Length: 154
Length: 108
Image (tube, rainbow over all chains, first blue to last red; front, side, top):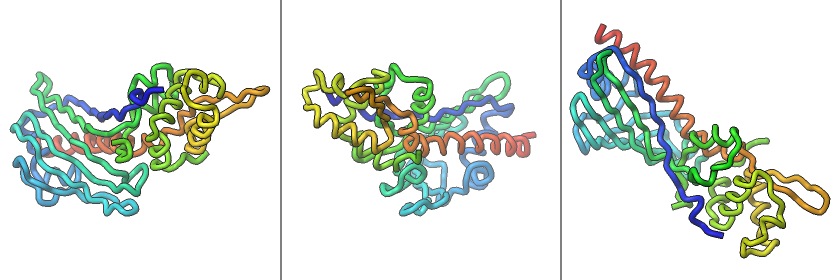
């Protein structure tokens, strides 16, 4: 038997929408603390400057205090905004389990306004696609949403 | 059946031989212990131990037929892995709804 068949693979969450507003207006909602608090969560210590570390407070779970630790990675005004998003605790399973991910917003001007694309990437799945080639529909539904970290698999 | 905790599922799949057994079961739809042992380079008792772990983790189910036991993968076994990411899938869709509302207000 070989052990290469089920390597960890990462999965992304992608949400994309065309919003009837110019990129400048959307950029403000993504990168202004007071506005972020109104649609996302209230950031602490936030500034839209590369290297800035900030946090979000979410619901605690077990040994995890619910703090999401973020670090600004990329700031291209009105175009692209990227930050690291980490949290969780090894002793948790499901909600609150370790997470080492990246959130990236990309804004593209379109005739109707702006296409806003969110990619939340880095959810680690313990299995890859080829392992599930012959799966039933039940598996196919589960696999795209698989995502969590396991230090044991690294 | 209550899904096994995530760490149990992870620990179970962390073993390369067991992962390979699991993968063969997934790809085979249903497979007997004898067929799993054949060509695996591992003894039948070792295979049986791995099957026991996979079963306890909720990743496979078994069915006895005559002298053979057949195994198939159980999709529900991976549910704990889906949970954390599923949480964020829902989270971001809801946040986008709130973002649309906010934009209407600040950029009417």
